[in-house]
Image: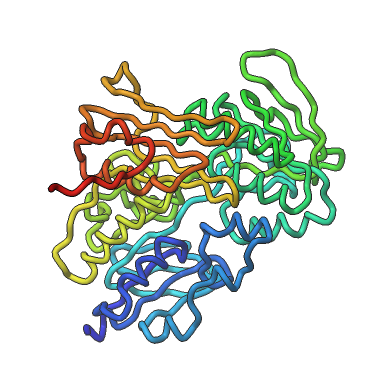
Length: 414
């Protein structure tokens, strides 16, 4: 162990926690210092939706206590945010005036909710859905609210709508695209999702979005003005709470001020190195080859690469790879794998199985007898098998007749 070496990490989110767990006690640093602008211990952000729905509590989604950190020479500065980074002197200045020096530095500053600049967006009952504070703000308003509007029906938006409905609110979920979760689902799967949400009592509106958020007192909105795409008509909707789940913005400002190359995110190479030697970026704040990240699977891959670099092990370069995206809602099983939007015009073959009454749908996208994408709705038992076939680029020619029904036991040779 180098008695003078300090690893400083700005940010205490999912990426940082995964990195600390991977480094564990094997790292050579005298100390690892972590700046957390949130006052609470690290929590599993993936579980914010069940927390909102009342299906779990904060203790259950907080993985580590103080003893765990101290045994690994890790010190967390809670409620402390960096305001300046000096790359020449290798130190940072915090909002409190605290100055910390580092040997190696990691930006894991994450992202924030994108809330469009429309009239009324700054009112107190207009929230994002990214942090524990967001969930606590929603929970504080539950006793005084009857109706919530969730804007954006991607993964987070659907999860927020279900969570608020589970707490007894009337919920409207609106999405500008005609297809719900359009990045992960096709129109058939989206219709099944629409049906399932409607059965839960959630009103779904597609092809529309808020144009203005209206308030009688200038502090809290009580209605919004809807605009339907392609039409001149407007409609007013009464609501007590608006949640925006319309995307994220990587937190790059601190890095950019320090002279580190940024575009949409903090730019990194295949080893998560920024434009300044000894400084890395990880997770939702970083950009690799023009891509930024909002799902955990690629971030776990980044952690694997960066941990090898920090442990001075031979590092395998980071690269883009297919993912399984899972909707985390109790009773709504949907897994999306790889490229589910490719079709015959792209030289692909589609295999589908649909049972509307049961809410079950499977779709496989094949190219040259190999799976490049899969959708599983209602029945997700075989999604990991499809993902493995995709990653292994396995020829499925001899399984075509049974592929939609999962792996079949092959007869042993006589």
